[in-house]
Image: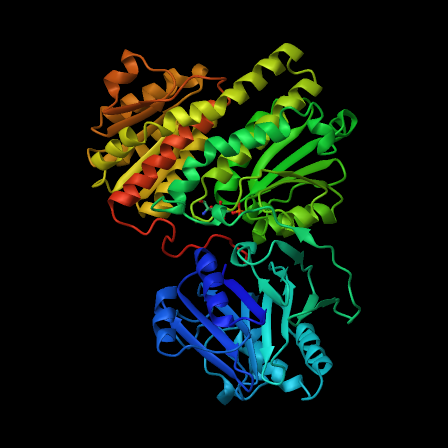
Length: 608
Ligand code: M6R
């Protein structure tokens, strides 16, 4: 959830670390710090607050040196404060460490060390003290040995970047259950928790695997396993460009990413629709599909909502039990998992700890794992049997938008192909669905061109304190997603309800202070949701309807309506969601919030 960057080379480390931290700030941002080796010793500056607080401190105290590590922190152990910010050092300041993850047994380890050497409340500090304890000054091998010994003592998850006063030209990285990439440059090398931090400098990277340790100097990178055997790594070429990590004239990344959706959907179509062998591509032959009698779909937050839609569409497959689970709950659900199980793991980042944990449970029980992932080379992608890459480019805003649409595209293309392959639909119906998919980018564009209309509607409801999102079936899943967006960025209390559930309790809350947003796209159930909206209206609720089916009945009960274009009804939820994305964005914008960095949240949740 925090961010790590490290540099060794011929340039000044500080500006490179700060530019990396700027790119990482979206991952965690209650404090930040850097450590730079000045040739003789390690200098450290850290600060509570946003990165500009650290920059302010550094403006009168520039750190000079060609080796350094930096960190943006999202507090887990100890409040956000200067002293709890990373880097943490051993008490003699020989070792400096930055850490993402959680050391579960840190209190136990701390007990065996002198309490007076600790200056922070973090779990990380114990790592610096332990490395220092085991390190026998001398050769770099001694430092590696000390680090490897510490790894045998600590439990939990970590990505670490480490420097030592004795080695002004050595940078070390190590990981377990937390991502770490090594960037390969010319006469310079990098460490980062996220490619975004170093993509300005290099596109050639190694992805470290669990319990691998990388030793970097300006010319070489050597990777070892936990037994100190050298590991040969393949260089991976990142195809993200620098512009894709910039705001490109938009006020916030979230808005930029909302507007990128037509292109992303189009890219997904070009990559996967012209391909008549989509199922072959992901290694799902007809025979294999028929072998599965259970399909579990797991994800968290927005990815889970995409999974709910995917599951509802896959329920049409014959002789197979399909269920979407929140990844964080999957392990408690006592599901039967065996070689006849297909687990579909959805994750934008490919690093979400709960989703990764669910994937590992499935693998352990011999299930097949197919993942739907954005970040190439991420842990979930690497541990899956097959991957559908959504190719949405870097998603920087904490609130996920374009990844959701691309995840839906992945399900749409997948189910269209499965329906055809299992003869649930005819070839002609398949071609019609494909045609409708091809139209989606232009339909999304039509909605985006109504940005001002949606903004005006949002302005009307700025003073609302409680919002209900209601819908049935696929529309209910979009209600969940719309409500999550509003909570995340506008800090408004909102609740999504399956429309039919309202009268079983929650309708008691409806009065003239409540906005009810109805999502009506599924033709066969529209009348029913409409009745639920009427019930809310007669209790003085304000009604905003997002629908593809406009008529007088809808107009009469709605205070506001937004009409989305009509298409195949399983694709309409994607369109309705674009409206809800913009609505949440303009509520948050109208309330003056820092939309890309919502309080208490981080982009990638790598702890369980
Ligand atoms: O990287 P992932 O897709 O695995 O992330 C899952 C959730 O943490 C994520 O969707 C989260 O709910 C977003 N902030 C939603 O906007």
